[in-house]
Length: 140
Image: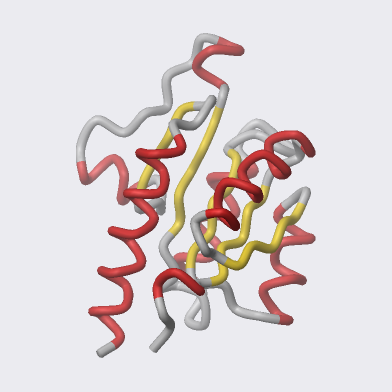
């Protein structure tokens, strides 16, 4: 059982500034943080040390690379129970709205939470704690 505040969070995003800002926020909250610039690099890091939670961008190497990455994680027997948070600026950048409206839509996205960028640190930290607590309860 992992102490929630020492949990390892993997941040996956092709925006270096986003990675750095959010790494600092998470580390200040007591989390250990690993970063990756794309899903391929993230999977390599996950082989080295399994994270307790993943935060991934929607658009990286392709328009839907975050969706593909989340689906791959949720369908993997080793990583399938890891909570996944999807983040995106696609709404403000391209005017597209991918926000799930129902629990069913969220499940179809293979994510446990969804946030538009820029992230509200307070809401993000509360959601991380909620997801880690739930995941920890499912392990027991």
